[in-house]
Every structure is written in structure tokens, then in C-alpha cells.
Image 1 (cartoon, one colour):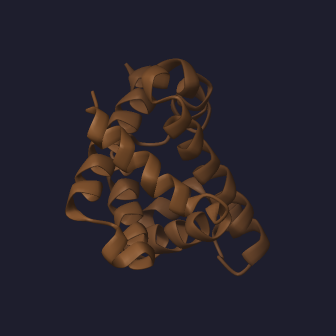
Image 2 (tube, helix red, strand yellow):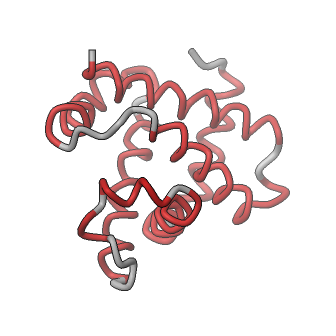
Length: 141
């Protein structure tokens, strides 16, 4: 799925994110809710967005899952199987929302990393996150 160069670029970006997962995740959620307000339906506990602690906590969990995917790029299905079950069978998240989340994540990365987030890195992350989304939606079939 990913070339050696793309893997290195994904790891390089993740190294810049590491330690800031809650902040990046909370910003990702806020951007998602602002640009795509219909996605709030999947986050009733965050509907008001007034509780920064809950937003940071859920953002941390989301980005921890991305970090796990980065660490297990060669075994995404195995690493993300419990998360795929949760989203498909319990939460019943519409799979059409994953590309929206990916788009918002790119914006968050670009806004924070600026020149460090090159076009090549963005392409590698797009390919990687699309692969993650595919794995997360496989349980829907």
C-alpha cells in the first residue's frame, strides 16, 4: 500500500504530532463540527463543544488510534479491528463521514506544521488515512 518513502513521511509527521494528540484531536473535532455540522450526531456527549476537557479527551483517543495505525502500518486490519467493530456495529457511523474527517485532519496538519507538511507528505498521509478508512469500513459489508 505504501512505499518506503511514504512510510518515512508518515512517521516523520507523526513524530511532529506526538505529544500533542489531545490538542490536534480537539481541533480536528471542532473543525469537523464547524464545516460538517451533521457529524455532531455521532458525538452527543460533545454536542455543545463547551466542555474543553471532554473535547480534549475524545481528541486524544482519536489521535491515539491514528498513532496505533502509524505504528502498525503493515497490519492495519489486525490493529484496527476492534475500532472497526465499534464504528460499524455499535456506533453505526455512516462511512461517508470518514473522508470528511480525513479532509479536516489534513487542514489541521497543514495549519500546524505549515512548511514542514510538504505536498509529498500530504499525499502520503492522504493515502495512509484512506487506507485506515477502508479498514474501518470493511465491517460494514
